[in-house]
Length: 138
Image (cartoon, rainbow, N blue to C red; front, side, top):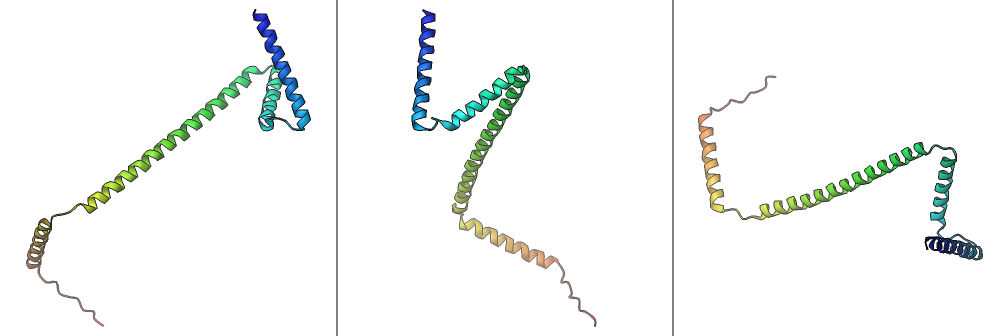
């Protein structure tokens, strides 16, 4: 039973390939050309590596490339997350500052403070002697 499934899948792939090539020949262009060109380049590269029997080095390079790409994407994601939190906190601080500035202050406390400050300035002025001015001699 397994052989029949394998046989039918192989025949279906062959029929699909033949239909695709005849369709492309009639149209005069490749279907998904950029994707297939990139796939062709990867296939040529894999065939080159397999014929030169340096599969371990190829796997090391590919795993290194994958790790670099994944770490770059992860760092970019965290940067976007931090910027989003920064924008949220900036808006929150701005909102809180506006609320604080618009909060009503009691006039009585302010007037009392001004009176206290004026009294302090008078006491300070009374305790310090007058400093004479210095005239320039020509």
